Each structure stands twice: as structure tokens, then as C-alpha cells.
Length: 259
Length: 273
Image 1: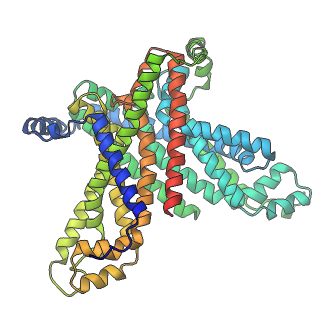
Image 2: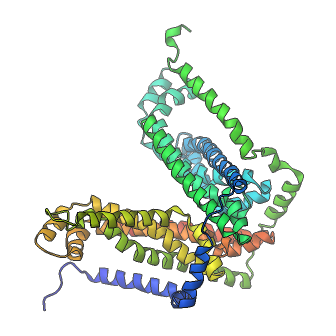
Image 3: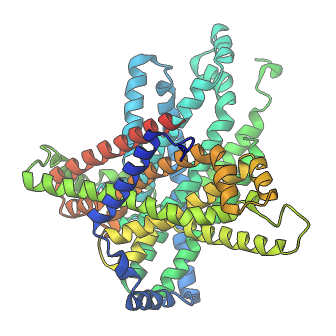
């Protein structure tokens, strides 16, 4: 029998390790996978799903959902805006425009902001600012500042420095140099990044309510806690619709801005 | 300054800025934007008390044992979730790939069947990934009770939707000619996939899966907030008891875990590239 071509010992080892990791994970978690597919479990799950239909479309509840949806939209827009401002402010030193020490300090802050998940920020902000949409806005803004700051800094580093150098050499003050020498070069990319984060933030903003930060998530959490699955399904549909609408709006804006 | 030296685009820019500011006002109202709330005595006291509790970190052996268990839970949840997601995504992704369509290569009937199946698969994937993983987790917790099982299934479903779509896109964008010539020579679809598409697309598929594993680690960290086990659940309990020392230790673990997953995934992907 001939050796099979293209399969190295390393690859076999890697696949073996991978399978071991997966099997180990399932074993550690002690998941009753078999129990999921017994007749009673399937029946129960079916009954649970059936309670979500039809969605609650009464005028009173729809008004509530619309209001929570507006709140969610406001949280996502405002937090993305704040994050774009904060990201721009931190991106300048992070791209090394203010010396090496500033670069390291800014990168550290950005990493810290970025590696704490939005939901954890939200629990902290609920403590700092009280329950409600303001806490959600702050939480999303903090995490997104970390993400956008890094992306903005990368865009800055990749943009040619010559226009800014020419302006600065001609005696323009620092602010004018930035506004007319650097910003026009990076603006389309910054806008594209900010819009992309907005698409993610509308989804996150809908969830933050789980920990008390307002919006559609709060409504979903309440209706599920009260076993009102029909209302929950209306909220989930609203979440999906908003995500699709924001995707569309963001794509349209990006096309218009030529980014 | 003479008029010609002015920025010719200044006026429209000013107009857009003013419009944006006017739109901003209702947004601030809707989001209940009150920075002053941060400095209200009640909130300041609660936060100050909580933050003051951060130091010293909680390092009692009992708590560390709990923390270690929760960390392994989190990693296992991410790995098992991705494994389920791959199981879900591979068949759907392959179904989406037009280059494996037998009816597309010749003047035969039945092309509409393939198209209908592809359309259905695309719809299914869109629904799976359209609902955020935390919402799935919240739903599964109601069905399967508290614990990591809900988290694993939620990750499997959302990430299955994402992976399936991207697998389909990667397979579509690889050179279709080898697969096509295999199909035209009479080989089956699976053979065409294995010998025509995978040699070119395999690396990218693997690398994307590893990247998604990294995302899954981050996602499973917060799954606990809805009762799906792992580090998040521990964090939730500590926050509710306003135990700053425990919360700080868990936060530090979060950071280390996320950064380590980042690093591991980058190293793995660089090795494969």
C-alpha cells in the first residue's frame, strides 16, 4: 500500500489534539446531549416554541415596543458618536503623533477599554449612573472607543504624512494642519469604521437591557420573566427589523460618502 | 483675509454640522443623557464603595478554586459551541456553494430545485445569526434550565449561522475550475468539494474558524449574565452582592482570558498562513 500524499504527521497530531479538546469540552460540561433528543424534551421544547406564536400585536404593546426601539436607536447612535469622538482623540497619540510615551499610554488605554465586554461595562455603568438608557450609552461608548481608537490609529498610520508636513512647514497651526492635511485623507475610512460599529452597536444596544440598561432588551427580559412569550416574540421581531434597517441605512450612507 | 483664501466648502459643512446638532438634541433626550447623574451623591457613594472594595483582590483559596472552575467552564463552552457551530455550518455552507451545483454545468432540467434549496439554506442561516447569541441563551435557559448547556447551544446556533454564511462565501470565491472539471468528468459533489475546492480554500476556512473561536471565548464570558454558567455568572453574583474584591479578580481574569485567546488565535492563524 502506498503512503497517502499530502498528509503530514503534524497535521494528524493537530487534528487529534483538536478532537481531544472538543471531546474534553463536552465531557467537562457534562452536557446531557442525549437527553435533549428524548421524546418528552422535544415535546416540551415544541410547546415552548408554540407559545411564541402569534406575536402580541395589540396597539398598546406595539407602542411600548416602538418607544423602546427608539430608545435603543438613540443609545446606539449616541454611543457610536461619543466613541468616534473619543476614538479620534485617543487615536492621535496612539498613532505616535505625540511621542513614544504617549503612544504606549494611549494603546494601553485603548486595549483596556476594548477587552472589557460591553455587558460588563454595562453592569459597572448601571452602578455608576443608575438604571436606564444613559448607563447603556456609556457602556457601549466605552467599549466602542477602544475598538474605534485602534482602527482609527491604524488608518492614521497608513495615511501619507506629506500633506500635513507641507502645511506645518508652511507655518500652519497644529489644528489647521490636522483639519486640512490629515483629516481629509482618513475621513472616509474613519466614517466607514464608525458606521460598521454602529451596525454592531444597534445589536448590542438591544441586549444591554438584560442588565438594566434600558431599550428593547429590558422589555424582552421582563416579558420572558413574566412568561409572556407572545410579547417576547414581538420584541425579538423588532430587534431583527431594527438590525436590518440599520444595516441598510449604514450601507446607503457608506455609498453616499464614497467610503 | 480675502474671500479666495477661505475654505470654499466651509458653508455646506457648517450647514451639515448644524443639522446634525439639531438631530442630536432629541437623541440626547431619548437616551436620558445626564452626565450629572454620574456625580449624584447616591451614585458616587455606591460606585466609590464598590471601587474601594476592588483592592485588595479576593484571593482566598475557595474563591480561586471557584474562579478556576468557571474559567475552564467558559473555555469549554466556547470550544463546544464552536464544534456544534461547525457541525451546523459545514452542510449548510456546502449547500450554498454554487460551484458544486451539478445542474449548473449542463443543459439539464431541475436547476430550480438547487436554487430553491440554496435560497432556503440562506434564509435559515440569516435567521440563525440574526438573533443575538445572548437572546438565544436567554431562551434556552428557560427550556434547559440554568447552566452551560444553554450557552453552548446558543453559541452553536448563532455562530453556526455566521460560519455557514462565510463558509459559503469562501467556497464561492475560490477558483471553481478544478471542482467543475471534476463534476464534468462525473465525480460526485463530495469528491469535487474535497479535491476541487478544499485544497485552495482549506486554509482560509480554518483560519476563519479559529477567529470565530476567539470571538466565542469573548461571548461565552458574558453568557453567564443570563444564567448560562461560566465566568459571567460569577461576575453577576459578585456585582449583585457589591463585592468589589471578587469583581476585581474576575475582571482581571476576563482580561487575561481575552488577551490570551487573542494571542493564541493570532499565533495559530499565522502558523497556518
